[in-house]
Picture (cartoon, rainbow, N blue to C red):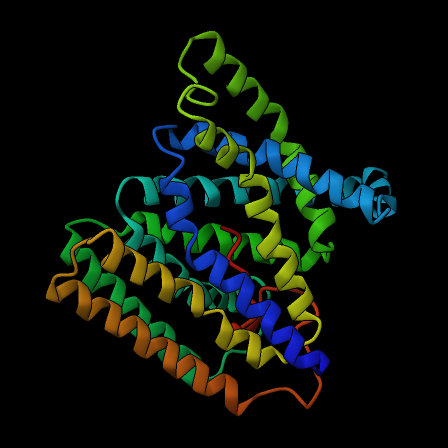
Length: 313
């Protein structure tokens, strides 16, 4: 099997895992979103620590500790990813799986806006058309919901900004996840300690299966990220850009077919507009595809091309 084909398998594996995340997090109820988030942070630190010990790759982390700029940037990234994870867990466990899928559908459009406003990158005509169609979609969905689809906007905005920060830092995925989770671990431990002291913790009190699933939330967080990192070094950027739509498509299917969330005509029209925007976006990316063999070397890069987005569920 060629290296590129292996990369596609890694990428498909990562996005399929992300696509079925709603089912996983549904099974973590009746724990509250904050308790789930805190455990996800703690067990991510544990799992990635074990991984870095196995591969004996602590050198980069030691260099990070000596760099205030990198530590400050990763602390900011940690706050952004905490918002993203928290909003995602809340959305899934409040029966808004479809809205979380919308958030990851519109993330490429947010990345374009950040690219042009913050990075001062060039945006082509078709990309502006895609952003405009996406904006109309948000208006249509706002009318349908009766309010802004705030969960979707928080997911797209927090991940888009997170991607921008990570692009500027250029930190390897495993080491970056370890430092970000470690930054969040102290408040997470404090919150879990308070929950247990108040007798309000669900961890260890629901069932053995529930306890195991809470513990493995760290593995569930890190595994698709590492699969994606392996794919990004082997697959052309346009290939990654197309693969990234697997996750929100599967999430949408989970919301509609498994959890039977409503999809009235107006909401369907809003999603249809988002898909039109993404089709325009993808066509433009294909027209400007990189040369043969060029890969998405930075899996968290924020760029006007939609090809390097990484949903950090």
